Length: 152
Picture 1 (cartoon, rainbow, N blue to C red):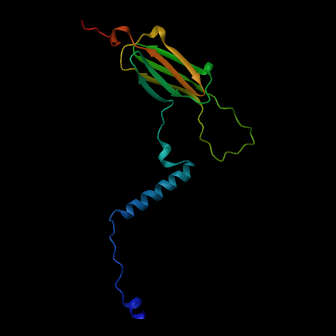
Picture 2 (cartoon, rainbow, N blue to C red; picture 1 turned 60 degrees about the horizontal axis):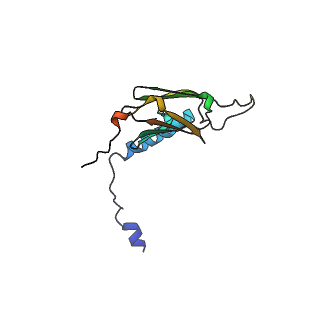
Picture 3 (cartoon, rainbow, N blue to C red; picture 1 turned 90 degrees about the horizontal axis):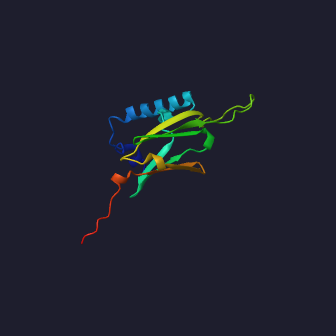
């Protein structure tokens, strides 16, 4: 037993030549996250509001997540085949004595333009805001709707 522990060969393992670079990179990410009081990976600009665009035979459907925004604070515009969703997200101010431990909610004006893939009928566009989800129904133009042709 004494012989085996004293004279055993060293445990050789594969050493990644870039392992030390990875360690330094992780330490730098931690440092930047600590200094800025937020995660280094979340420093990039986000896109607001998040949008899904779907279609069926007659309409395009744009669904946007806009939590905390009231109907009066929204502005929708449609031109040609571009829908623009704009507005302002308002967050009530805290008291002067309040100390933040985490501050992630953003307030301010926003605008997002969504290009629709085809021609539309802008006269019949409808919008509804339910539980923080804005649903805009955009009918397709008559000339781009598929037409059923009967064979005789």
